[in-house]
Length: 241
Image (cartoon, rainbow, N blue to C red; front, side, top):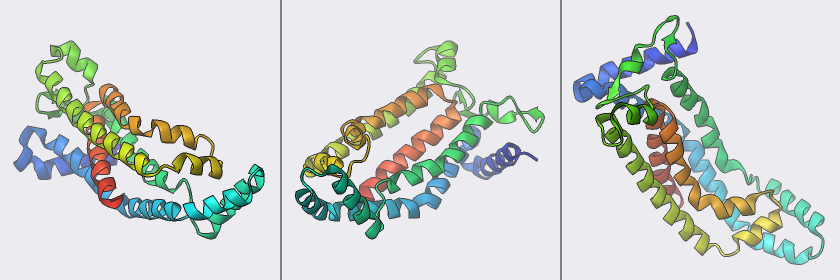
């Protein structure tokens, strides 16, 4: 039995458990629950990433001292900063691990709700719905079937509204954090991390790119993105107070 068949069976079993509560939208509820379980399993890594961020913040005075010591010697400064990170066991890239480990779960959902067959038989999950919208459908299908304000189009608009609200929340938090960290650009230059300065400038806007993803993937995968993005916003607000 293929991994996709096993995963399809797992989704069906979760949906069966949730049918008494969610009826025709039980499969959509199962996807939300599955996403929450994935994020719960990754929460220890998110906490570790938060501790890493706090550790990097604590190193800034020492990096400033190294910058003053090695003025005009960029290569020696870069080596000294890397040695400091190694000594304190701090990785500048530790925060990306939770996101990377989510990719297999997302691609499983994407493939499952993009395939007409699973294990050699018809994929019955494609007919399951969130209210009036099929979980295997995309926003383009909703537009073609009933327009922006058709039954399926309204479901997608609801998801867009949630994503936009979360993106606006993340934008305000990112801007506030950057305002409270006036030396972040200098720290990026000192640490010589390629592209970090650019990332810092565009970071407040990245959440809005989720709108594009939600618009082009199957509705089931869009539910994963919306649930995971919302979880991340709440989690980061709690961990990075």
